[in-house]
Length: 164
Image (cartoon, rainbow, N blue to C red):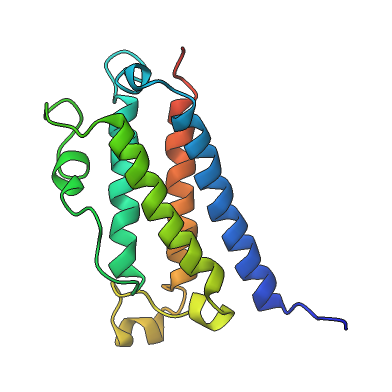
């Protein structure tokens, strides 16, 4: 039996691969460091690695309601990693807990992405009104996922400056 892949399916596959590669690379970086190393600054005077892990986890947690996938798991991370800069809080969760959160949220997101049809990928996200979406159909789930994969890659670019 021969199957034909449509252009929409190819775009979806490209988006999914982009997402999965970004998550795999970031996870590999974070998992390759000790808890002590996670507490170090990327470069002197800049963010700590643990802060970037918490930041990315909080951003991905926010994706659940944005993509219509349910309630957030870790809304308490916003105050620590989104609305406050690094080193303004002493009560960060341990690196092991943040790694667990990172894995949980990305597994949840990735499993949803793998199950979506091309039509579901192209649905609007919840931060855009029906009226605006009619004028700007590119404000869809696909573009949001690609944007967030780029966000991970941006921070991975910062992390290359970290010296063990």
